[in-house]
Amino acid sequence: MQVIENKQIKEKLYTEKLDNGLVVMVLPKKTRKKYIVWSTNFGSIDNKFFAPGEDKLTYVPDGIAHYLEHKLFEQENGRNSLDVLTSIGVDANAYTTNDHTAYLYECTDHFDEALDEFMNYVQNPYFTDENVEKERGIIEQEIMMYDDYPEWKVYMNAMKAMYKDNEINIDVAGTVQTIAEIDKEKLYKIYNSFYRPDNMILVLTGDFVPEEILEKIKSKITMKNVDKKTIRKYNHEQKEIVNHYIEKEMNISMPLVLMAYKDNDLTSNKVKKDLAIDMLGNILFGRSTEVFEKLYEDGNLIAEPTIDYEFSKTYSHVMIQFQSDNPDIVIKEITNKIEQVKKDGITDEDFQRAKKKIYGEIVKDYNEVSNIATAIVSDYFKNINTLDYFNSVNEIDKSYIENILKELFVEDLKVVSIIK
Image 1: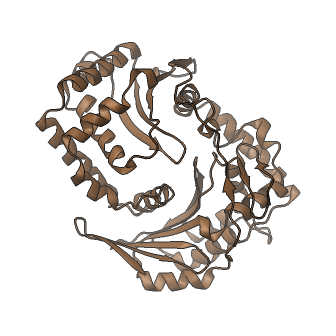
Image 2: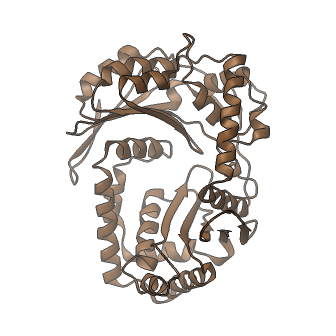
Image 3: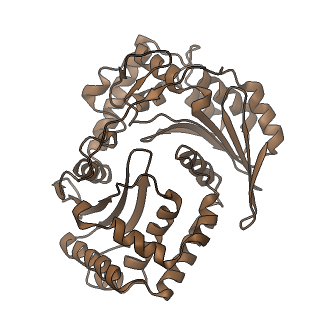
């Protein structure tokens, strides 16, 4: 096994690529909890591809990655593996994102007992006309629920205002119309094209002996290597945004706002940029800033705005989100602060404070096994080693953050999405 060690936080990540191409990573921690997640690099944006050995482009309905996630728990023996795992006493779940789908469970006891069921259902799909149809109504209800969820709507509206053709505009769950096109043949094609060991990663965090758990995993692997590759196709996206402003009315007590800046640079160091943007949020409108104090005292903010840098292989953008009865005032204050710092620069005091805060937040995340594992998975599919975040903090200087502010927070590439 290859061992990647970070001496700053005294963590070791054990990695091995199996003969069939599956990557297994183990990060041991002295805790009662054990966490396992098995993920495939297939999400909502992967809606067209050349299947292995085929020269005709395959198009699949929006929402099929999420649909397959639901159906993979169904087994030929009539059992639902999610119910089986829950009955054992473990906390099992699954989720679908823009670029990957993951299956997981967490427990303090019965890990080995649950592992048999877990390894079995991920590797043995069972789709029938009947069980695929049975799920359709359940997912339709989930879609309608998300349509009524303001936080999701403000995000999707921002994406549609920012991107013209990018697949990020595809709702992870699809629509009632698109999921009507999903059948067992399409699900099997997706599984055989993307649920292949060389396109997957299995991560374990918690009280494990790396060599022992690796041998146990190997003994339960039945997936075979596939020689021919699946080739994905993505739309070409324009550099310009679509609309600067988009709003929607919903049943909400206070307007919800998302300011977003489109980042057309998909090749720069994403780890450093992610950290720099987090630090900028603290410097621009963090709880200790004059901007936040004024907005809070005047009743224009009830909580500190959040900032996030979302990125993948085909898109990247900054998002600032907050709630306010006077969104125009908050937008103006934040925008003015951005322009002022662009002009005057960042003080040494603000820089050092933000740097210490971000480092502390990263260390805190490494206290929870679920946070570690999900971060490893998400970063892996972005070609990032999660432990690089610690090293990159030390590489960031004030001039780098100031350059990111000037290059990325551009008014021509800004979108404002509001739920009123």
